[in-house]
Amino acid sequence: MDNRTRPVKIAALGMEKRTYSTLQLFFNDHCKDSYVLVEENSADISIIDMDGFQACRMLEEHKKQYPDQPSILISLSHDKAHDAVYIRKPIMLDALSSALLKAKERLQQPVTETPAAEEIVQKPEQQTTDKKPKAAAPLLLNNVTPPPQETVRRAKTGAKRFDQYRYSANFLTEDADLEHIDTRLAANFNPDNPLQAAEFQYQSEQTLQGYFQQAYFTALQKQQNVVLKGVWRPITILYKSKQLRVEKNFRHLYALSGMLFDKSEVSIELLDNDADCEPGLNETVLPAEPFLWKLAMRTSRGRVPMDTNFTAPIKLIRWPNFTRIIVTPHALRIAALWAKQPTSLMNTASYLAIPLQHVFMFYTAAVSLNFVAPAITEKDQTTATTPPVKRHRYRKIFQHLLARLRNN
Amino acid sequence: MTNYKIIFTGPVGAGKTTAISSISDRPPVSTDKVASDMTRDMKKTTTVACDYGTVRLNDDDCLHLYGTPGQQRFDFMWDILVSGGIGLVLLLDNTRPDPFQDMTFFLGQFQDFIDQTQVAVGVTQMDRKSSPCIDDYHSHLNKQGLTIPVFDVDARKRHDVSLLIKALLFSLDPGLLENND
Image (cartoon, rainbow over all chains, first blue to last red; front, side, top):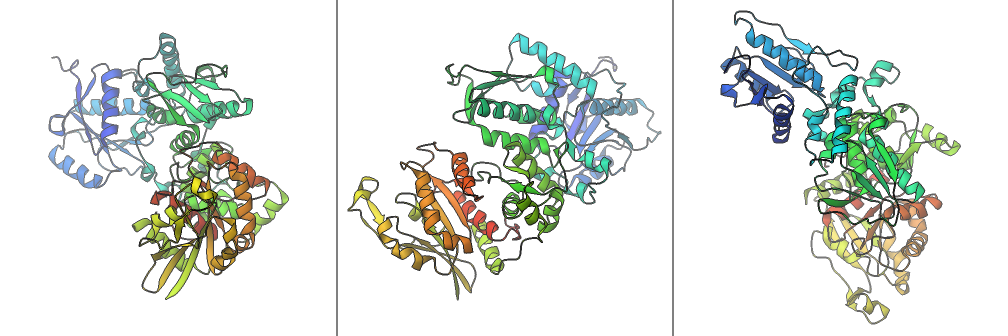
């Protein structure tokens, strides 16, 4: 096979199994045989996740063994070292495509030339020069069982828009759990700095979370079942039981949490309440609250919806049902504090001595379900200005009890 | 040795004995007797004095778990049991005809104690009867100006009972460190 037509062999190192599979899907379905995943020893290029355990050591060893092999490093931080191409998480598809092209160029360079480290900057307005492979939204849509023809058409339109606006597909971190949030990023966060503030905010209205939220509360308010349509298979919200009817393979929906969808791609339709609510053969029924909670948590990834006031006091309207949802880090403490005394996001992190992003994540999940709200009454404002809660006289004993509850 | 106690209360059949069993270090001392009143329609035995379990905290400290008898005719014991308690766990049975009435009743009975400490509410039997839902409980509580933890709880599951107690502890002191979560 001609070198120009043979697929470039890529080794994916230090990645979780599911991330690896996602990358495989991307190459198989969207790069039209341009790239193929192989073992490290037969690869032309390597993609290395630098946030994994012992990633630095792995990189050193890899460089020793394959000094001429171009590498693409992906990481939450942006330390530049080595003659590698860097992409900062969350990954944007066009950035990944550009990185692959850069690495490919390096592959064709003479070995004597040592290229410098280079970061692929991911900005919303960034213009891509890369046309092939076509990197667009449908990567995540491949997890969906084949949708009807009309939906396919919509998905393709959505992909163009997606490409046009350079939305963050976030796909390489789709399986990342809470531990992957780099809490150091907000260590010196200043809410008065608009640039920093923007970095920790996102357009929730245009995410699946935002649309689902809108559909869910429409159903509750109108006391009518609602169907949410988009590039995903229809999600039916059953207002009476506060459940949703969704395809069995619903987990891929969480993977869509990093994407933005234009309004024209999504529809919320009221349904006749007498219509059949029984799940179809490939469908299942889920409780809506835990679904929205998790979706918001995944979408947040340590950020808050746009226009969130970082310094206004927040109060708890109702406790989340923690036995049936994911307990985000420090969620119980934050809930208890806000129930006792309205507190701003900034002060919450400071009073409880916890990472700001954990406060942001809890806030985003809680606000998506209206469990929290800005403290606006006079009484709230008074309590919000009081000093932080006092240490309980039995704190030491409580600490022992918490330890026992965990250990047994 | 210093002793501390948490009180479990709620109507007959709400799962107080089971919840204490779920987290006690040793099989709880139970004073269940064969039910002779209308309770026998709900379960074979019922607690007539109290349930008692323990959680050893360290060499010097022990937490005592007390379950109150469910029937109102034993309410004279409630004041005795709560004396010196650090908090209240209220368990409600969702299959009862009016669980909101139960909630209002027990919150009223223990109001003085709750004012001095905190309360966490566990709703049991939701797998058998899903309505009213947790949101409905909150609506009732919000009308009374209360924002307290209310969780769907399976009293047999240690995870659920533990979370309820954790919520109680953090309500008492949000500044507690969560290094054990």
